[in-house]
Image 1 (cartoon, each protein chain N blue to C red):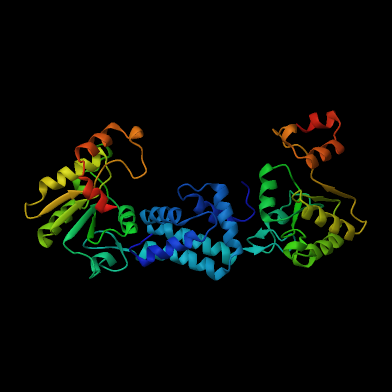
Image 2: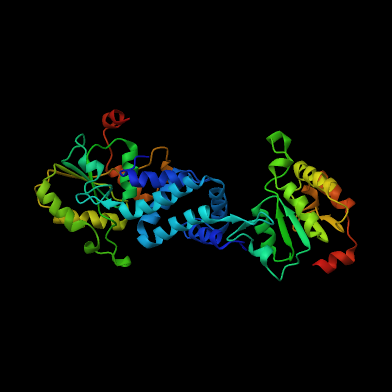
Length: 206
Length: 206
């Protein structure tokens, strides 16, 4: 692609570095911005730069935050004795969007994966153990992705937890709502059979 | 979607205002930027703002430019007596990418379309007529999209051109390379029959 302006080319190249955005899409976005008011475009540039330079990570749960403590940790209406352990910020957002969880979080920043060179020391596991020691939560819910790495991480942390924690749970794994038995993999189907629920619970949860 | 940070939310909202980018994609892009170096993200923000505030339009052909005159108009290796009339910057880029054209351009900024309230006065037609008067080009090539509006615009401009211009042409319309006769619309097929080429020309152009 031959662009007649260096300024245009720089902007297109920057957009094209984003994941899933090729040169043609980048050009389309840049030409769109070229038609917008200069103040709107300045606001766009500023919002992105500001986000990256000013965002903090909550000192308690390692979630993103505008101040030292994230809005969830600082909220008086959330149960402070129930911690949901997740892999990443993306999972916090997914759970928050359900509007069904009223506790607080701990973001690990990944899962133990020796093949990728990620051990417990690269994750926020030690801060979590200290936090549990200090806060003495009543329940810890593991909401990690159902993979070998996720399960390893749960096993590792659970072994290190002092017996002070009353309940340690993990989110249910089973056939997804709207899914079909026939197409579920054996592992999922086997687990959902092993962890079957009394029908009255199922109806109550609907 | 519930986001735990206002900074994050602002950045996501700005991305989501771009065409074809929804909230989920915007979040994915912002989380990607969050993982990049702060200097890279600042560079991204700056490139976009700079593009919008500093870009100029060539005073001769109305193409985008970094200075008063665009690189194409300023180039000594381009034929300055052959002007290709296009609708938009996007068309300049498309033609430049073929690397087959060695003349200069004139960007109209649209085509005459009374239904959309676009008359000759909203376009760079008057500046084009003055330019032709002054520069006395040897050939004018119309490369407008083959629509009723495009044809109207060609007709309008052509009527206003002084007889000084030696050649006025338009890009060939016909069956696209790799296309099939069977699926071509009647108009295209009829025109490509009317404007048939001697086979020796066709072979020479390959």
